[in-house]
Image (spheres, helix red, strand yellow):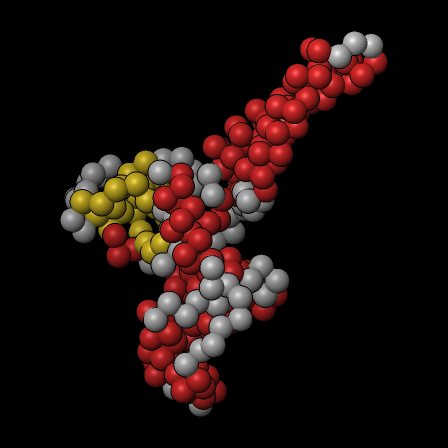
Length: 243
């Protein structure tokens, strides 16, 4: 399942570099935006998204359109998509923080979120430490003298790093690139004990709050909130960060 998830993420991130947009659609969307025709620009940008022409600039522009149209939830979602593809897109980061303040979402990143930003490095670190451990194991027990002591210490350090990196990698998963990571895009979303409008609420979720999708049943999705609580939300109130 981990490899499948990484494959899904890779298909989204593989197009993170410069793209050859359909010139007509891209220019038409930008022109419509500049003229204040935001609904028209939204349609054009969404056509590019459906065509799989992902880029940080595209999602940044789409986020701006959604904001102009008064949909802060989808604006937040697309700014996050832009930053996922291009972490150096400062304009998207600035706009994201601004919209989060507007919707009153002042939640600070958890420790898991902060470490998750470096999710790509932990499997690499675990792999390197594994091979260091493997190649040091034989001389550590066959050699004599100071050289043997050196290899034994190297084995110990590599083993500790291997176990730690593996544990952290399992804990944080793919971090922000997690395929089942979604954001609340509605201003009124309640996490409920059951898949029914009449069910009692576990907690109220804020616009832009992160949830992990687990399973779907009809119009409802079972998920885990950032607080760790499990419950059901209406499927239309959340959307995956990775399309």
